[in-house]
Image (cartoon, rainbow, N blue to C red; front, side):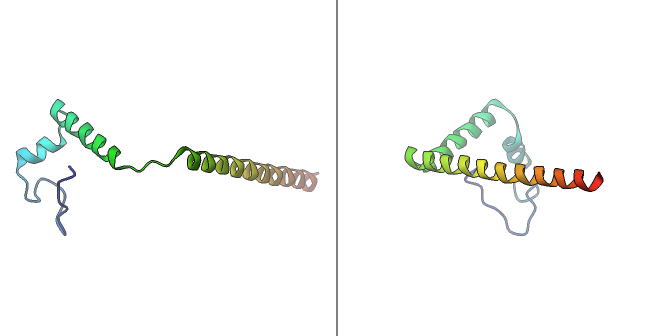
Length: 90
């Protein structure tokens, strides 16, 4: 699948220059098709540049702090709006 070229201006179906057998083979759920899919997935995973633990831990901490800050903000706005609505309705 990584070797396929995108055709400009043509549809992606079996009519875009492929034989019917070749198009059918690429979309089948046969064991060879599934094996090929997983081989391609593993090849793509090897291309990934994973971040180091220090960067991952720092970004995770940042996200957690941001979640706490936004939760406090939304909770306080909810509480104030709830009290405002209660005051108006009473």
